Image: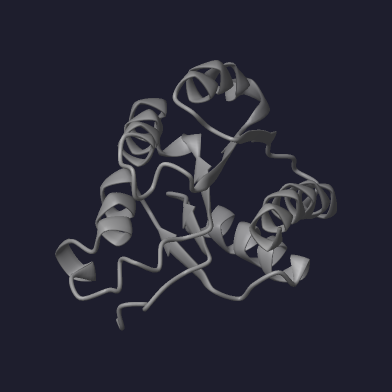
Length: 145
């Protein structure tokens, strides 16, 4: 697998099916096609900071937005947030957290750790895609101004 030079959006999602749905929703937003998917917190950190299999990646090209599904585990999701927010180079990356409705109480911990937005995943793909597009649009405009 080739190491991507950069990604506008880093998707952290352990489930390949959910990752495919989220990627499709992002592509439908027509904001970018530069998406990189990682399966866990460690791989996300390796990608962002150019470690392990991502050595040689231009780390100056940090993602604009990180979409973090808390299903990777709340503890690991908070770990990623703490590392991102604790580094001056990455502290301003917009982070959108996704969670299932029954796990949405974990949003409070994510907010304390510095997440920018929280979104409940729905079973209706069109509704999910529309909500995600709204969030992505909002943060994308911040980069344009």
